Image: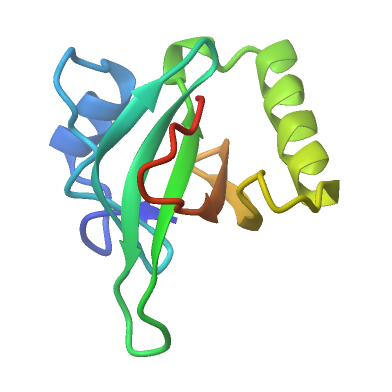
Length: 121
């Protein structure tokens, strides 16, 4: 779940509905993951560097979110298909899918972070 507190504030709701040029998600969370900074943008999504922020594991990951403005039914279906393809891939030169889910009605996925390797959004 994407949160920066236990409740959605009016400011957060406005920011999520009106994506600005600057990165407003860097201080937010998806489940146990805190988004640190944007790594890149592609045609369908935005990829963030994140770290797990709980007492269970210490790990750095990438999080891919679909762009709000592209969340049409077809785009959502393509994004969901992309993460399923990644779930089925096992290759030493492809970042491994670690987790996936939905937050605020939009799908996301979490992949291993390969430092120094460009990860296409």
